[in-house]
Figure (cartoon, rainbow, N blue to C red):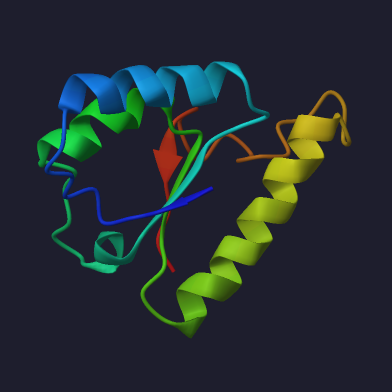
Length: 104
């Protein structure tokens, strides 16, 4: 789980390689971004662009409602990862692409 606005000022190639490694060696990558709660938010900075292909859950964390929504989605994410609800897409019910973001 990463909590960041994605405004990385370091080596973007290193960030991308690190994200790929983490994604390959973990059950899933969850990125919580306090800026993603803005209606006009787009992941335009280089750090977010580099990270997005390796993120399984991209979510805003900007208020209490966003934390409640996050809790619901994390439970669904966990059920999908541990195989509960076999035969159904417990993560998103077909509403979100594989790499997705949601808002509260």
